[in-house]
Image (cartoon, rainbow, N blue to C red; front, side):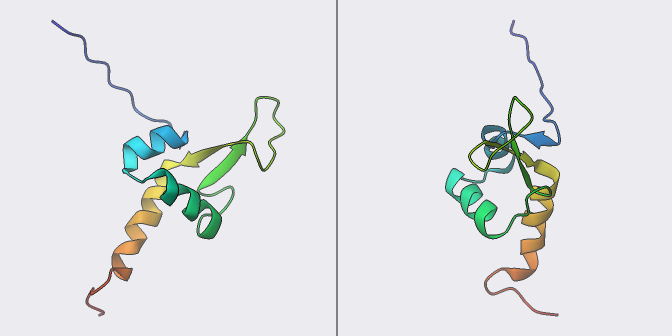
Amino acid sequence: MSNVIMLVPNDWVTEKVLISVTGLKPGTITRARKESWLLGREYLHVSPDGNPKPSSECMYNRKAVDLWIEAQKKNQPGAQRA
């Protein structure tokens, strides 16, 4: 018999968890962070000392990223325009 542990991610997650829950690739995340996402909405820099720098690890708002993905439905190649 094996035990199953179910983890529910927090609103703010690491890149590794974001990849797992969205299926986005690391390069897609990096490009979106540089070109589309807003600091404070889709991502934050975090630091153990409370003073993050531009090179600090990023945490991602998985709910905001889900909304960003959902918003792309209307811009799909070949999609019908209403």
